[in-house]
Amino acid sequence: MKKPKLTIIFALLFTVAVLVLGYVMLGLLPMILFAFGFLGGFILWIIVPTNVSFDTIKIPFYLTLTFFLLHKFEEKYMDFFSRLSEITGVPVPETNSLQVYLLYSFAGAWLLIPYLVKRHYIFGYYLSWTFFTSMGVIELAHFLFPFFTPEPYGYFPGMVSVTLLAPVAWWGMYKLSGKSIYL
Image (cartoon, rainbow, N blue to C red; front, side, top):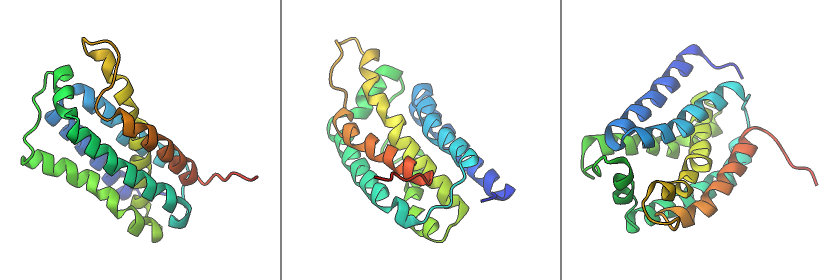
């Protein structure tokens, strides 16, 4: 499926906005991680021809979304942002700031995936790639964060739920690519 230049430009601006917000709010390290998901998803969207139906990705999408919500609860209740702040030296953002609302609205765009992909809107496939790539790649950083702390390697907030989240996101990426497993 050929991608219109305007859609590519909009997707690139969307990606850049997420990276800039990530840097301003959380610092360089989280921004680099966001780049793996959003810029990585953008690149995959550009190079992997994608025209699957929503039914093809429906189960991995809803499972990934469910495990992402579980992951956000784990991060919140296990104080992820305070621990991340110790690593980056960047204070935890105020929860009611405009920047936080903007970043969540960019992530909230992932909720449009079912609507957009059902109608084969090209931007929906971009969002799908960023969603699955973010969940399947960025979130693995929870296993790297302990190396940046003074304590011996151990639990870092978010680790447990990533063991469920990442594999279903990889499955979503596989299905989104249009591949099938024949038994």
